[in-house]
Length: 307
Image (cartoon, rainbow, N blue to C red; front, side):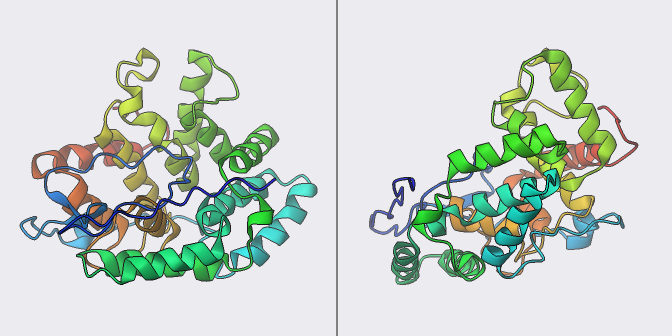
């Protein structure tokens, strides 16, 4: 049975015109954005005009690693999902993880393609700062996810099932995602610490990104993670930025940036701004930038390094 549609149209509140559309992501909500970023149109986070812009090269240099995000490289996710399903049936755990990412990304669209398009048109009709970026992000989702329908049953439950199967088959990123969802394969402190260590040793950017929600504010006071980069919203951002440094596609058109903007309403006013630049411009206060930099350096240094 397809999941009931959970599309939340934005309320028009003068002079504010927008709030977030349906939130399907199984990742934790994006970290709290600091005072340097203000909500645009009631739901779209934008870079404050007063925030100093940092040179992209200061924080954005990715390490030259042999990694290519297979999901981000696909313009047609519907056909890609069909190929992945065949690979999953053949026992490919990594294909199962990638299939869960496609499901997660396309679920808001698949719930009602016509409704998604109508929402996008409604959003575009309100000239609020940040709206252009959100409309562009939603258009990217619609183009890449065309072909999916409500009958496909895309949604959180299916994502969880796909990730559980992939994790049991050996996908480290899926295993990390389950921990971040609060449903680890094993609910013991020893397992949790060992999993974090395995993610660090792998230097797999997808595993870093999948683990990031578990290492943020949710980890505050967790003695199991003592010594690791964990415990506040800056730590969660640091894991995400580290994933970018390790080779994850974090460009302005990437799945990561598009999901933040299209599904969570967190968009940059600058359409060409990548994720790392946006983080340091809007999500991290000036006094916290050096700390986040240090965290990221720790995470991308020697495998297994601790803070």
